[in-house]
Length: 319
Image (cartoon, rainbow, N blue to C red; front, side):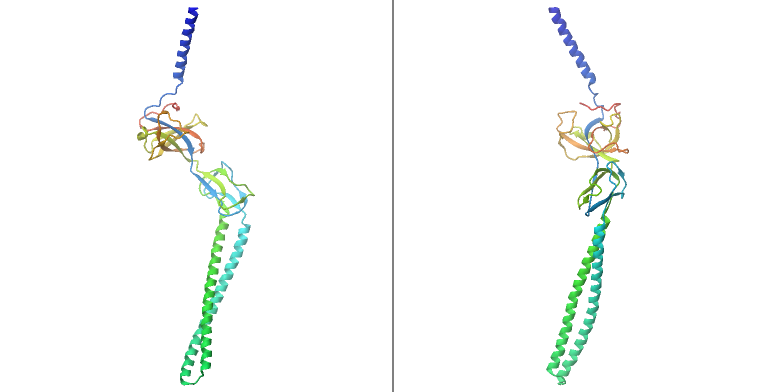
């Protein structure tokens, strides 16, 4: 009985020893000197393309994942209503222009009449002084002179109104011409279509999202470094990035920015030293020429802050 109990105890001790040895063997190797680890999510600068005018989508070249160049067609809206309004407004502008010209001609004639009336009134006043004309005749000439001046003032007001109407019509023409141009929506920059916001046949309204683009060739990864280690990180320090989707591949990067202020460790960020509370954000610019890395992907990164440090043969996440 004693031997059985003894062998059982020795067996348990041996099993515990083997388990601990396996545990130690399975532990990831410690980070080499001169290498820092961090993790975060892939980010890209996204550009939201929105409609500036309303209209039904007549043609769409939106395909999620498609790469576009700057000025490539994304969506073409039906321009029928805009063109109809533009034609009517151009006609109104032309009519306002003709009205302004007509009033200007009438004003020239009225001013000539005023000049004649002024000369006639001056002559009659002199004749009145010598008694050659009656007071009634002088009053009639004075009334004619006042009527001529009143006509000039009326035409001046009409000219101002005609000019204002012509200017307003011209502005509306320019606005509608601009809107007709905006019915063709093109890519503002080269990139990849991440989100397709509208389908052919749907009605676009000003401000509605048409597509979301991102340049996946230039992406970023923001990792977090403990406050005690941030002094080691410098701009342009080399980095290597790995994502679960491509576990056998690493992507080259460099330190592009270092936050000026510390913050508490974000909840979705794993820190090798769980005692770390204050961390600094470090933004890595990552090469992604084939576009494999996508915004939102969780990623691990290793930064070499010591120039002569050797990269580990296998990039492993410290626990």
